[in-house]
Image (cartoon, rainbow, N blue to C red):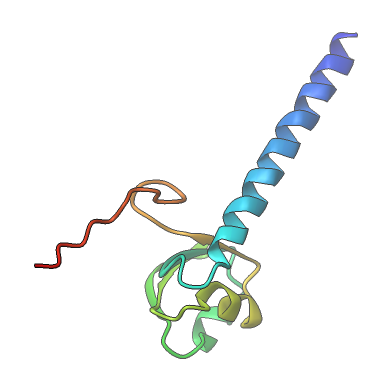
Length: 104
């Protein structure tokens, strides 16, 4: 009984995590949604063959933070061999703050 509850709870947790990951990954695919992204577990030669207009902000063996003004940034990185592309902000995974532009 206790083991069954534990397994059920683990399954729910895994499903929630998978749903979150799919949602955040999908957000990165929206054209123009993210100019700065994190590529998790970049392939060995990935950083040497980045698409045009993409620059490296920070990189190590586990993660590469990249910047570009391309509207198709995440899609271009997937085509170049990225395994997982997530939006990168200073305020968590998705920055939902409203940006106010002063046009005077």
